[in-house]
Image (cartoon, rainbow, N blue to C red):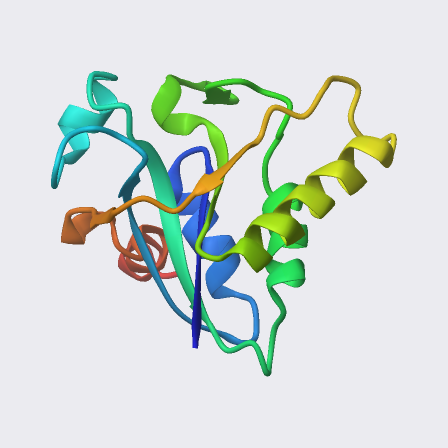
Length: 155
């Protein structure tokens, strides 16, 4: 198994998108890239910790490639919005790829360059690509939020 970590706005929708991919065996939402150890949701939302809301994806590379995960990452959010996604504004909503290996970093850089050259975006891509820092798992009520919410509402 391998691990990938992505920040693409509010982690609820990002997690739901990655959970649908065959070969993804586990996801967890949490926080990464800040200065506070084991932050909570309200601390991260205050903007004082520097963390991004992220999804840690555990995947089987025999079933899905890291490059496929990058395709999904760029398809599910607007990588041209700095420190926001739609109505969600703040550094915690930044577009970021946390690379766990040099190979992931190279693949992420190539994917970002490919997106920039694609003509799909009318503004520059601002996605950050940085080494993976510690991951802090978010509170349990944030895990698989849309799945639990859907079941509660009969979806």
